Amino acid sequence: MPGAASDKKQPMFRPVLGYLQRADEAVARRKASEKDEPQDHPKPSPEPTRGKPKHKPLAEGAGTASKELRQLDFFTGPYRGLPNVVLRSALFGCRTKRITSPRTVVATWKGAEISYEGISLNQRDESVWMQLVQYWMWSRPESYRVRFKGSDMLRDLGWGSAGRKGGLSGTAYGRLRESLYRLRSINLSLSLPKEGRIYTMVDGMISGLAFAEDPPDIGFTSCVLSKHYVSIYANQLTRVRWETRLKLRSGLPSWLHRYILSHTSPHFISLDKLHALCGASAERKHFRRPLRKAMDELKAVGGVVAHYEIRHDTLIVVRPKAGRYKKEAEKKEE
Image (cartoon, rainbow, N blue to C red; front, side, top):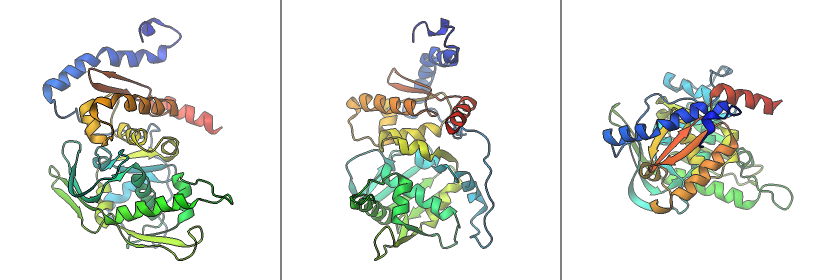
């Protein structure tokens, strides 16, 4: 963007240029401190729309979850969310091919250790899990049981491909079933050594999976969420605007969407570290092209990326200002 600083017609990019002018110095400091680990930010920033949204109190008779889990209230309405320890890892990677392994240690941000046994998970499985948590939050039963219609789940996930009679296709239902089976069969172990917390799920992220004998658009599917995995939400969380996620391709764009939101702006990360964290199927030497394509998609969808640049094998991301994004969202709603 040569000469953009002197262009009076685009004063909005002056802060961005200030970040980029100091990019070389920031990258040099990062490499001098820790070559293997990127700079961490202990306090992740929230979704671009700042401020605490208003939420209705829990209905009488609702389950009394842990007080630490009350921060899940911020995921109601247009938001979903996940713990930062999961968002900044390859647990729900963007890989296309499934991997079955007796025990796999996934790449994580420093300060966390995650391993699993079973079939690898991807971004589609992450969307299913986030929607299951959303269903549970409506009543919060102490049994952690979730009951839903398959047709409602598919429409909430944006998987509603039309069938012959305008309904949902059998292929979409099949994908949902396979994802639920993977969440049930995986054995997960997550530990936070600095905080002295270890979460072990030997019975899967969900259990008690039962499909109705009626057609999926009429009958109900039920399952029980893992209490241990839900308790991870007591740690630092990041909100994700669900509408924005549904507009993105499932894979690297959707993975980057929630990863970027879990950090402050500007954010610097080496391509080697990013390639490992996202669990990309592409080899490292071919990673730049899909990364640029995904970043362009995030920039086009709005509210996530204001500017990005790949410099010295480092991705530099600048997020839009929250106030400006909020005004643009309000105009679209009108």
